[in-house]
Image 1: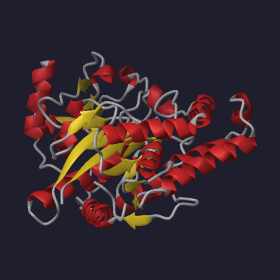
Image 2: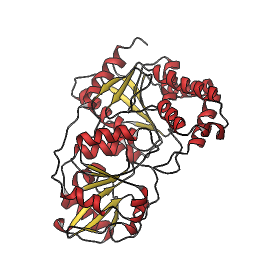
Image 3: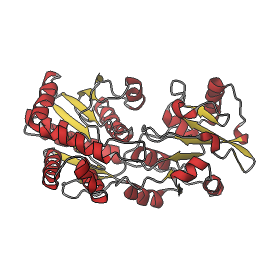
Length: 388
């Protein structure tokens, strides 16, 4: 029996899309092969359809809204905790009304099941509507918020929140997540304090074949600069969809006799001779990942797992305020080659040592993780056997 599934995706960066898309793709392939029931799909996310279609293979309609902001950020590295708390307080002040509103929207789209990464409001709305749901949570916002406040307790007073009211909000968030029929926790994950989770392997987009010549051709088409493969190191530079002011003008430009070329979002690239903008219309991000030499990023799920799958070493920008960081880095240290730099080193360009060290190390071995198939199996079993 076919079901109409809504996939709800957090708007906090691109890591949540990087997790849920491989699951949807595994479900779609199994369904098309006749191994699993058919389903139709609506994606509920504040992401462009181009970004969604680059990663999601299944046909879908799009509802351009998100029920989840995650955390308010000053930039890709720093949480605006006071504003985050104020936003959560406003949401939970009228929690029942918001739950009913989202449930009504799901009903209007004829939703019969929900998969969510990681908007807990949508999970609560599915419960209110009486449809089954599965949450995908390598982190959950209750634990992120709790740890941020532990690090900076004065933010509660700045946001006008009592400790009692804060704990009530945390309880509501936990209860919303717990209302899901199943909670999947893909590695690498921030341990959940209270939620019952089913651990699965990492979630990854299937790596593409490296095509360095095609990547260099794409760069030439968009910059007018022509490189020979043996004359340049390509450094894929991304902060996982979050903004971070960068000054590439100070960055290292050569290593071991080759030019360094930083491939990065157009808004960050500027007009420097050693940067080039992404050209996603001519080459997908997965192809760029497979064809680069090294990755420059912050701690984040999608970039860490996808770089590791492609055996690309990582220069990572320290993100000490983000509670998930240490768990991601612990996993990365076990599965890939990485070195950490500070934001001061990034700004001043004093990180040639990290680039050179990683470029001269023995290349790693590409890895395959089966989390998407594990998740697809669990989701089919849960959504089609539910008694809702």
